[in-house]
Amino acid sequence: MTELSMDQRVQLLVSPDSERLAYFIEQAKVTQQVWSLSNEEGFVMVETDDGDCVMVWPDAEFASQWAIDDWDDCEPVAVSLETFKTEWLPSLTADKITVAVFPNIEDEGKLSTAEELTTLLAE
Image (tube, rainbow, N blue to C red; front, side):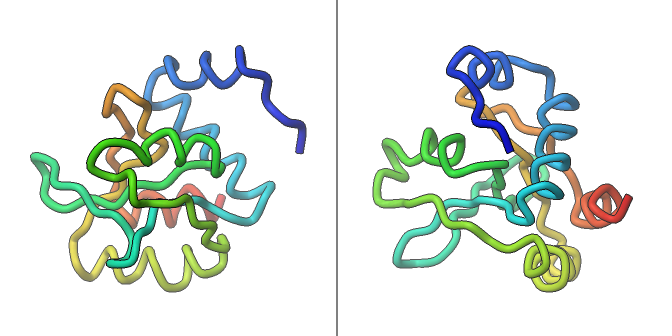
């Protein structure tokens, strides 16, 4: 995996949700992991208009950009793709929790259902 330049990172952050989703899926398959934020209470969840939501990113650096303000006690945590697919996604589906895929610093992320991500990661 090649390291992204700062320009490439900035470009990804301002890209449309659909492009960030595609990048997330591609990176998850390559690195075999996804990243989320966690503190002593567990993984961070946010409330959206659609209900509770968990956030995931393609790498630790993107995730750490969110570890500020209300979440300054959080750290990026890697989750193996296998665990994400076999434990997280079925649990999120059962609990009807959406997933904000690769949210940027403008609070924008592709809201996906766990079922959608399961399909995309299986392709």
